[in-house]
Length: 135
Image (cartoon, rainbow, N blue to C red; front, side, top):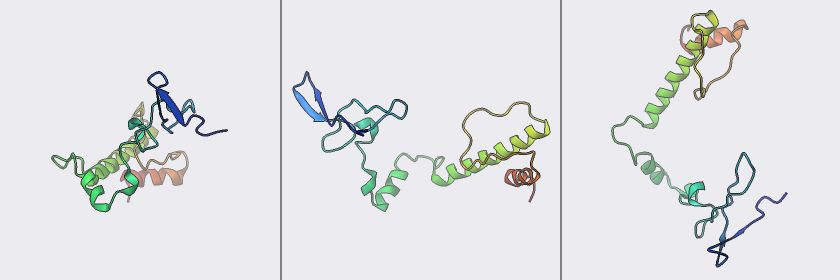
């Protein structure tokens, strides 16, 4: 199977030949139909504008603080929020197992989530420790 069958894309009624974006759809496995940016391999929607491979540590730090206004979305606050959501999800799982909660929360699991079977005693104890209910 050829990974990128169409390297050249004809636009403007065949008058302009340009490189085609190398990104492919996860669902359909088809190559993106947009032209790549000049001197790049990808279009603007698939990362052609930013080249994060050549960033220095100073420029990475600048990008982290670029849109930071009040400190609500710093890396530390986001990690603390993620840990809190993880702990809350385990508390909910314990409550559901005990019959205190009827329905579980729908949606994406928090980062760091490990599916544990509460019917196995060792995994139930681990779940209680992760929820912060037992030391």
